[in-house]
Length: 370
Image 1: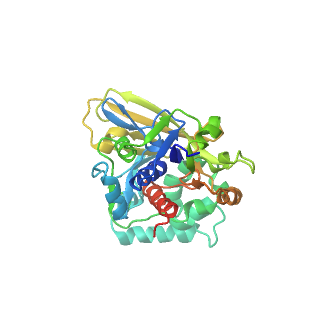
Image 2 (image 1 turned 30 degrees about the horizontal axis):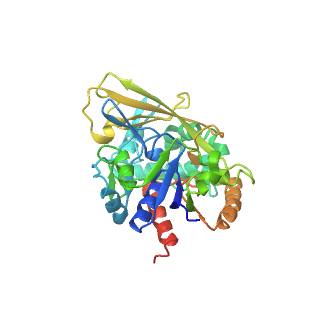
Image 3 (image 1 turned 60 degrees about the vertical axis):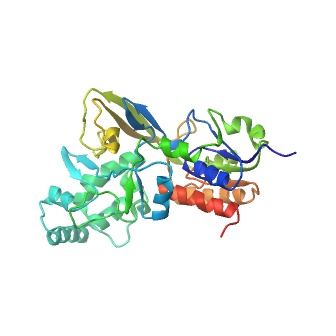
């Protein structure tokens, strides 16, 4: 009996939306479902006081891949927003990423040679040849002052563990710029969709059947019966009923507030490094789009331990969880009519351009394209 759709796509984030769009271009039909009450996954924006609020944390599009940049600009124009966050530590503001402005704020150094000499001195004093944990790794990359001021407490809040208990690979490298440059990303292309990410998702899913507020696992037989193949973007261990055990994540909690001022902090992202502040950063959403609204909207971001009742945001890619994921990948490879893709199904942190590239690659494989 012929099924209604060629593809059932579980999850309406960027991976699912791009796959659905590309399948439609190739004459295939899709049903996109999502357990949330909206489309777009974590890039979803909600308009509040005329401001596009990033509901699930700051999403700044950046890439060096011109083809990906051109791809997203087909659906919505992007502005020229440049991410230039600052960090508040011990009552002082520091520019990020670590650059000549940061070094001047820390040490008063005015030239690259002075900053480089100070870094080399601290690395020689505090670094170790074979770092065994995150603290030793950071000290070996940037020395004590930057580590203790701008890394240690923030990272411990983010991961919920002491830096000496975290693996060194979390910070394989730390970008250090010997120039006065507060642009957080080095990528050639960077910006925010004019009018929010919903315009990008709506463009991708134009003309495609969607259902929101539905749980795939609550009626799996019904949904599987609608399509020939499944594109699954949820947690890979959940797909298999956690039969090998649960993969671990860190989660986030967001507190959003409307303020009766037109400018609360002067930039989109301010990190709060000190351990006695429970949140890691405050996002002021209007600055992503150079807003001039009379009010503003801020979001405080609280890292938290993950459980099955919370959203999974950051995979904990330690040896144990990576080993468990590889076992699930063996099970996934045996699923002939299921395509697994996205950050949860692939158990890795993706930037947005990487998710889009991964989805486009999956489309080529699915349609046997060179």
